Length: 320
Image (cartoon, rainbow, N blue to C red; front, side, top):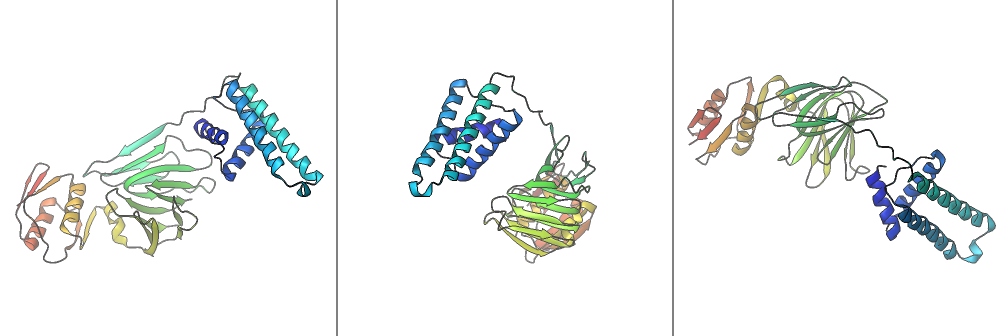
């Protein structure tokens, strides 16, 4: 628990707004502080007196609310022991205010991103390799902690995670959390997409909604994938489609998308901007597989099928 979280918890306790779980968390934290003789606080001595008095008062009220016939001596001893613990823990906090607070070591984070038309290969400090697709971003610490490896992804990336059974590798992408020990998989989490897709190549991956992890979790193995609907916050499991990871080998695939989605793909893949001056309606669904093909060749095929003209000038494509 950091200082900000601890401060917020104190304030809630003083207002009487703590849930049972939060009260338990504060009790455990105070007890641990009393045992270790260490604590961090930004409160003045007067504020600590208020906190101590409030804790003592709350516990007295709990004792008073107990019916007389339901308070055998052992229960009174138990409550008295808790009161003593809180008073002692509060005193530890008060005494620690006079000491120099221990400043936590600041974590250095690294951000890597790609523009339209770019891709990037990365190797993290633990040996994990990442291939970042166009117009994507990843945030990760310079050095991972001792118990877990956490990174944040926006866009699309392919991961080959170095195995470490003592430190799970966790990727946060929007409201989706993906946890692995060592495996290879792909995450497509572009902000404009309705869904986030996780596709597993090897190993096992746990995928869960960050809002409802207890009821919205899947364990994926090789050749399986899951789609996360961002609007409904629901996960749906399905069979893996190899086309979803073809981008890492330079293969661009169209699978019947509408024209506006085709334009989005081409802009991101080739790093260009489209100006559409004519409404384009695809007479048939457009399917295509292009291996390191030029933009001009793709547009030539597309324009023939959809009856439009185009012009490429530097990074500008005009459809007319």
